[in-house]
Length: 189
Image (cartoon, rainbow, N blue to C red; front, side, top):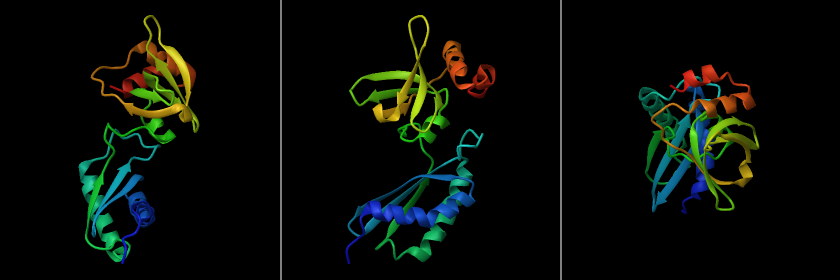
């Protein structure tokens, strides 16, 4: 019997795992299936809901979800032919920003953005709607406010910073998205 297409299998597994993940108070970010012969590796990437104010997912929560997800997959082993390993993880800082939710979760973080025309810019993330994001591009004197359509972005990724964002960028973004710059700055510390 032929193994199912990894993309199709990932979609089926998403349907099986979604109630378990939601029951744990999390959301599925991605389900990936890699196949090598009759062996499969299932990677379940989960994230906090967009409305969550928590800073991250606790490792104990990941461990509990891993056990629950494995138990949920057992009765559905007919979907996965052969043996499989299950990896449950949260997205790392290297996760590309591919959905509006990713942009919103990284409000006031610095991102490297590569456009479809090949240009690249580093910019601080502001308000993100369903089709575009407002950013503050650092300048020599003052940051510049720009709106970027997601369709113009080829790749975007959060950059690791070891200091608080410049107040001028926070203020510019607060003026455009209605955020209180003082509380936004406090939240990012």
